[in-house]
Each structure stands twice: as C-alpha cells, then as structure tokens.
Image 1 (cartoon, rainbow, N blue to C red):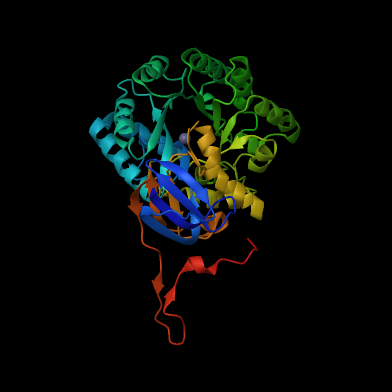
Image 2: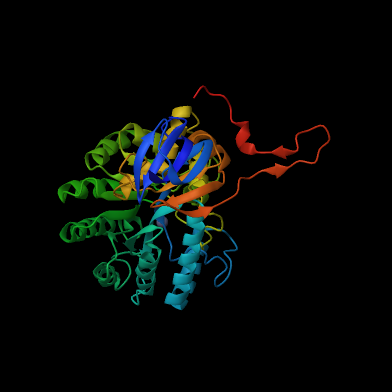
Length: 430
Ligand SMILES: [Zn+2]
C-alpha cells in the first residue's frame, strides 16, 4: 500500500512504462508494474516523468524588476548595470520579498524546485540578503533555495565590499561569490579569487564565482580559481559561472586549462540565454557566440550545468522560469543536436545541476525524495523541443501544481478537430 502511485511513466534514462510508488515524502518503489494499490493514482499515459528542474545560477534580488525605475531602452549590458545602480538604493525588503515569492510561484508551475541565487552584497545595508534569507525560509516547503554572497561591484573595487560580503555570510548566506574579471586589474582579480577561496575554506562553504564573463581571451581567472581550489582543498565544491572568455581563448592554452579544471573538479555553469544575448557585443562580423566550450568541458569529464541567470530584470527582458528554454538555447548555441547531445543537455538541467548544488536525495531511485514532474512530452528530447506544459509537479509526495495539457481546437473542414503538439514525436526506436 502506497500513498501515491504514478503509472506508465517514461523516465529520462529511457525506461518506459514504469510505475513509481511513493510513501510519505519518499520514493518507495520504481518498477515495471507495481501490483499494490494506493490512496491516489496518477496515470502518466506514457509521458515523461522527471526529477524537478534545478537552476544553479539565478539573481532573485533583481528578478521581475523589469520597468523599474524605467525600461532598458538599448537592451545592452551597460545600460542594465546603470539601471540596477539606479534601482538598488530604492530597494525595500518588502518589495524584494514580494517579487521573489512571485518568481517562486512561477518556478513551481514550471517544475523548477531547486534554485541557487546570487545576492548582491554591494549595498552595505544588505537589504537584499535580509530579504532573500526571509524568502529562503518562506519557500522552504516547496523550493530549496541556496544563496551566494555576490559582490556585484567588485570585491576590492567597491569600498566596503569586503566587510559587506563577510557580514552577509555571518547572516547565513550559504556560498561565497566573486567577480574577478570586474576588479580593476587582472592582479586584483587574481587576489580576489585567492581571498574568497580562503574565506570559503575557513568557513567550510562552497564557492560560486561569476568568472570571466567577457569576450577577452586574456581573462584567465578560471585558471586561478582552479589552482586555488586545489590549494585550499575545495575540489568539487567550487563553481565557475559563465566562463565565456573560454570561447575566445587560444586552443593551445585551453588544452592545458581544461585538465587543470578537471583536477580541481570545477562545476561549470554556462548561462546560454544571457551569454548569447550579452556576449560578442563589441564584435561587428563575424560575431562571436560567447558561450563557453560546453562539449569539450563535458568530454573532459567536468560537471556542466546550465543556469537561467535572469528573468525580466535590467539585464534581460525575456525569460519565463522554464529551464527547458535554457536547454533549448544551449542546443542551438553549443550546436548539440545529436541524440546523445540532447540527453546530456537534459541532464545539465537536472542531475548535473543537482550535483553542482550538492543536493541530497535528488533523483528517481528508491529512497530519493518524492519530488517529480510529469511533462506533456514523451521523452527528454521531445521535452527540449516542445517546452511542454508541466501536467503535475510533485514535492515530497504531494501535488503542488497542475497545468492542463496544451491541446488546440482546430476548425478546419476535413481535418482533425484537435491538435496536440506532443503527439508529433518521431519514432526513434526508443
Ligand atoms: Zn549571474
């Protein structure tokens, strides 16, 4: 006897027609056919049942602020930074909490139940950290939220940033952030990486830096980050976010860099939507894509997970909390069009990101947390193509969001009366 059984599920690993039995807040059985009954049953009718989506890189203090105090007319990074600078002194805890909770509602509806958000600690009032710590507690029943202390204006460049970052960590922010390419000089950037890794080692915290978010091939802070990771014994606990300069680096240099990153077990977090939007802005033609070397990093055994980064904020007016939109862009920009490529992209939105965030009990195996999403698609490839509705989102064994299937009525003589895009899946032989 189970509390809930999901019947006839297709799993991301390719198994089809699987039943998932849930007892309390745990997955208790995953079998071809569960003979027992349950208080509640959901028939997945051969659709994809996945563990929830995981966003390892977001900015929840800025999200949904689009239009405040005015729109980004040029759509450039520079006007976005100027806008955030105008908005920041006017931020209140109440408004920050309200916007973050509203974003979390959207995230839940999209089956996104784990988020790592950076928190700008540049304003010494630390109202951003206060607000997001409150949000972390309030959403805990339905979203696991990790917070990164992020010195947006530079750790050494901005007066007071060293003190503010440390105070934010004292308040309970989980992770040490940084932005070495934004310090005044390359040597200041390298010094900031060392200082921040030292803080992480002393406090026993992970590290997640915005690193080399530039088209400058000489921006090589990831090398320093990997070296300091090994030096301080932080292997596996450090993430390099963006790493866009690697797109433009010399191939010979990269042939030395990637093995060093692998030795340091760096978690790589590209942000495909933002990278394709903001990189290459100084180029005329040819115009660089700017995304880091996703395929090469994966092939070297590095853990690569994709972040959403921004939704409707001063830097990015688009976004919908849908990690499949992130994966869809990654497939295009990284040119990962093969069947195995797409499976890897789906993993980068789920299991890889869970590893980056160090999540315990994540997955669809017996004993894992009963957190899962039923999608209106047959398999991960179709999910990435369709960005389909999340028919049900389950957290710790309870349905917390539902969306009806997307089916259009067709009013054409001699043609079917309805269209369901998920029924157009190709036959790829399992
Ligand atoms: Zn970011």
